[in-house]
Image 1 (cartoon, rainbow over the protein chains, first blue to last red):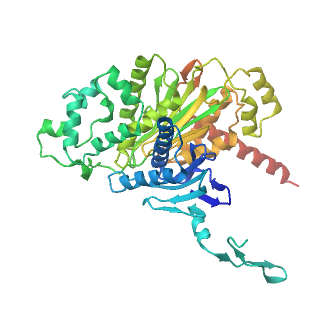
Image 2 (cartoon, chains in turn cyan, brown):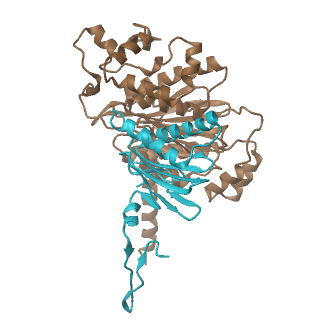
Image 3 (tube, rainbow over the protein chains, first blue to last red):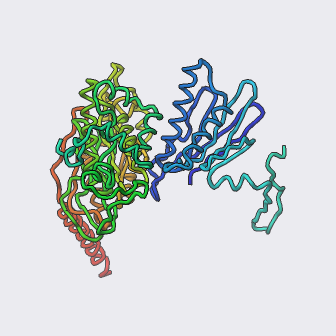
Length: 165
Length: 355
């Protein structure tokens, strides 16, 4: 399944996506890029239904670039995220909703780093960490208990918690 | 074009169709057309200036579109029910097609069986069709849809060439096709085309020296093959704007560029053979025999692929078609080979046994 993850740091956002483009059971490409550069400081990660992802992401990408050409300055990440969400919402109750899950990561010169989670029902949330795919379940869990089994038996290791440090 | 007559394009002017289409609340086509304008494709601008039918090709014959209704004067059925013609047989996309790029160009191959459920409807179908001198398309999915869309693509590419005095690149062709198919997403249109072609260089920059990178892709190229490659180093490997291209376009909306693409029910078997034997540094004969072997193995195991294999080889000079080969011969040769191996093994064990 397609997987996106994003983590916001003090002055950066780190995002990663898998590279597989699959068609039912066949992996057709192992080097597929799911990130779309909206501007110098904004990145859109997009997964979902086959044609919808590229069509929607490219539409957003071109519109953000058009904004810069028209107005001379770039959209902020929050504005870009809201623009994206509005488009998703507009198409949601049409005959052709876009089934895409998105992460928008950007750096605003005044507000700092920002990570925005959007899903196909056009929800939008600014979050310090977010993921799409099977990985999102792992991110929701606050901590992990770890045990090690070796020839001596079962050992309890230190609990892993998210963001403890 | 004859096709236009059948699809009744010439019955009414398109803008009239436009306004009548949009008058029917909820026709899928009119809604999608506005998407196109807002998506801002460059096409409408040029079309408006150079011809009077801006989105002529966007409204091929839908089963319940307005012109049909008016012509047959049947009660109008709203298009949003997406009533489609029911097929008399279940559709299974039985085929094996493949395309891959290597140092000597692009190979496109496919079997020739058209199946309708469990029936072999036709054992000698053309699944690989030339679009222009440097582009060939392999088709999979519904045979009728593929034939129609190949013709539409040929027409649009030719129109582009006439309007702009240069040929559209393969990537541009794939994008154009993908955009044309987008309105039909969610309907029963089932088209999975692999565009295999060679882009001519536009600028004078020539081939990027990607032969180093591409041989690292292959991993197990022998030194002998590498030295052969150096001799023909003028070949363009997959640089962004020229050279061999294999792009997969599907009616679901997927558009994938890659070095190896195989589509159809026999594609898992073909991928197995190709992933094992494919290197960038193959010679033309090796590549052709690899493609034949891949299709043969797929037709051997897949019930919906079979009969013969069509092979096209595309280079900077254009496409060349190999003669269609009946895979029955290949099967008998394979059986003989296996029989020989069994005999050999028996002889060896008999020699050992008397001890």
